[in-house]
Every structure is written in structure tokens, then in C-alpha cells.
Amino acid sequence: MYIDILQPPPADIPQRRHRLLRWSGLFLFCIFCALLVGGWRILFDSGRDALLENIALGLFVTAAFAFVYTTEKLLDFRGLSSEQQKKIDCLSGQHPEIERYCRRLATQGRALTVAEHEALAAWAETRLATGTNEAEEPR
Image 1 (cartoon, rainbow, N blue to C red):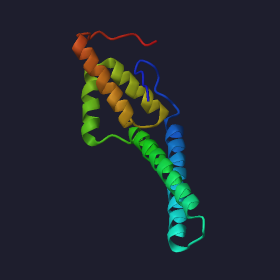
Image 2 (image 1 turned 90 degrees about the vertical axis):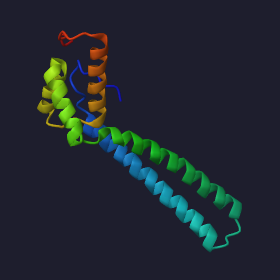
Image 3 (image 1 turned 120 degrees about the vertical axis):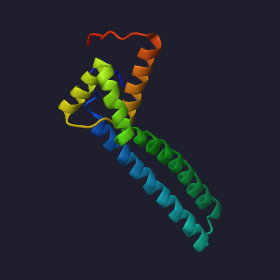
Image 4 (image 1 turned 135 degrees about the vertical axis):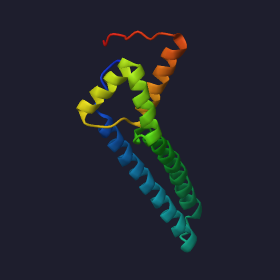
């Protein structure tokens, strides 16, 4: 997820998280269905063994990869730990742009996510590496 801290924070973060949760649940359901089909194949001899095995395997593998992918994306939407919050508080005092971003976020009524924390920390490190300390005007 791309975050530009000089722009207002994305307002659709809760919707993105909810959408990923729904997809993750759907893929988990597909994994369960694949296990049911595989179990059916093991418990009952239906005469279509190869077909059922291929369906169960294909559904399981595809859904498992998709589930892992969406779950990894969900990790960006977690809340901050106390250490991460302390780091952001420290960076807010050093960089007015980060403080401005956090204020804009507070007006939306939500807390920082891990993805935003990483973007703010990377931005501050880049500013420190380039040696620019002057405040940049918002666009």
C-alpha cells in the first residue's frame, strides 16, 4: 500500500481492511471445502477417484495461496505497538510533516496502521539521510 505523507491520509483504510477480511474468509471456506472433498474421497469410494483428488488438490492449493496472500496484506492494517507509537511520537516532534499527517489522521477518527508507521519512518529516514530538515509545504 502506497502512502504519501504529504497528502491527506487515505480515508478508505477500514473499507480496505474489511474487504481483505471478506476475501480471507472466502478463501478459508474454500480450503475447508477442499478438505471435505478430500475427506469424502478417502472415506467413500465413489469411482471418480482421480477427478475428486484433482479437484480437492487444486482447490486446496489455490485457496491456500490466496489465503496466505490476503492474510499477509492484512498485516499492514494492524494497530501499532507501544514501541512503534513512541517512535512516531518522537518523529512527530522532529518533523512537522509527520505531526501534520497524524493530526489529519486524528480528524478521521482512526489510529495509525503498521503500513502508515513504516511509511512515516521510511520518510523520516530518507529526510535524515538527505539532510533536509526544512518543512515542506503541503500540496
